[in-house]
Amino acid sequence: MFTRPFTSLGWIIMPLMLIYGLITPLTYVIIDAALLLGIASGSWTTIVLPVLVFILVDMVYAGWGMYGEKNWYKLVIAVPLVRFVSRYIAFSVLVYSFVTALEGSVVSWNKVMRTGGVRDLFAKMSSRVSTNS
Image (cartoon, rainbow, N blue to C red; front, side, top):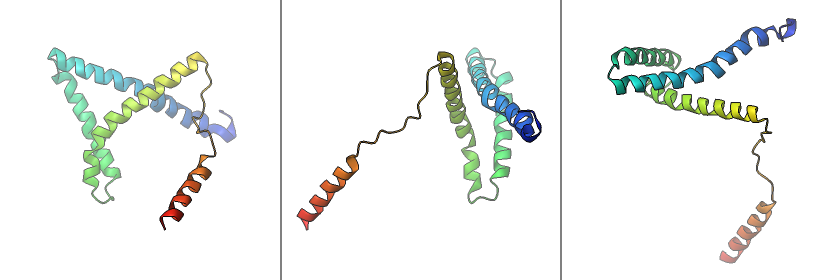
């Protein structure tokens, strides 16, 4: 992994996966819990301001990336909602993966079993069309 042909995997991709795939989704939940606790306890000004600055910075660099798009400002307005929803999806995937790894169970691809029912469906549809015409 750290040898010559695979140096980008070992020195770039693996640390990024560790940071953005494992550590960041765990901290989002802690930050949101601290925000809700601060709002409930009344000391929300010290917690809300950094969260608002983070959302503002997030919107600025998202707007910078989407500036050439048509109606880019509508996309930038949706950034906080998308970030809020996606962080919990990432957290739930992380927890599910962690529990599955601890159990040692085999995870399937969730593929649909083929039953051959499509041929019967087309036969029924063609018989309806021929009787109606």
